[in-house]
Image 1 (cartoon, rainbow, N blue to C red):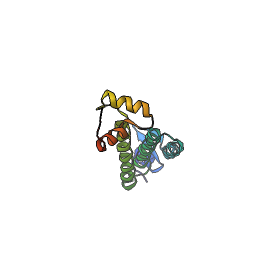
Image 2: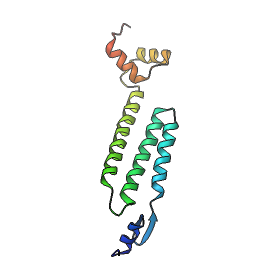
Image 3: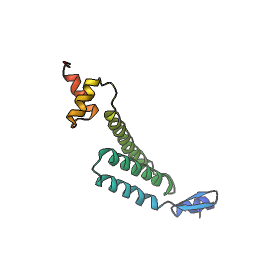
Length: 130
């Protein structure tokens, strides 16, 4: 028999916050829906943002739903979230227009198929003759 209302709520999959209990079972559905929606998107940045949000919801679920936090799933959901955060940072940095000369910006706008990051990588391999 649980010793306190908080332990009793935790045994039922609820989070007790100063005698207020909230069912955390819905978090797993939110997490899964965020990740499924993310995988349906074609834009990589939005896909990664939805996957990151899903990972955070999974972490919250694995922490709050069980009697004790489920550390292995929390760890691996955090690793997946961190990988997506790194991917998001790389995508954002690749899209920034810093370190381009006016000629390189004009070339980039004319070409329209390269991202600013792809142009930077290409320019490292090439020699600019302006």
